[in-house]
Length: 213
Image 1 (cartoon, rainbow, N blue to C red):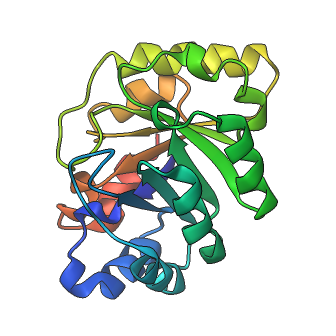
Image 2 (cartoon, rainbow, N blue to C red; image 1 turned 60 degrees about the horizontal axis):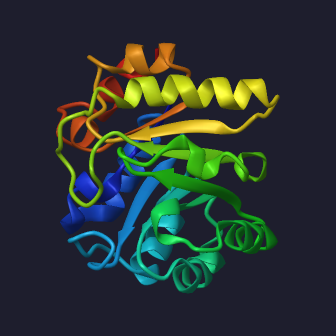
């Protein structure tokens, strides 16, 4: 299992130290939640802070857009060159066009599905994606409880991906901990995002290691 700590739960008063600490602890990606206060009822960080995070990070950046105007924010964050840039299917009228735009920047495109969103919404664009991010909580705030139906959704997505002979990765974000990570692994998940579980622990390394199942 690959691990992507979500900096939404980090101490922003010493963000540079926090980023270096999770990278030193062996994380695989640094997950950054960008919220605009419109698509979700929360407002987080812009390109100036994300650029600083990218410079501090020794690991690839994974940006999750939770915004109304995906194209605008894609153009805003593309110069930072994250490994992954994901956007919500619920908010995009022309997902294929945006996927191609993301690819044109040399960035791996990903689509995010809220807990209630059907996998059918990405059936015809799955082959164009490098990753699908399944939300296992309702997006907007950290520290929420894991929605158990996400496991069945992950299993169904894995069947879709394998059935099509694709290498698309599955990422899950929300309420992930050492108690449910084994079930996520069995469901076919490749990457887990964890915020409070890692940043609220006394040892980032031990927390990250406990998710490597």
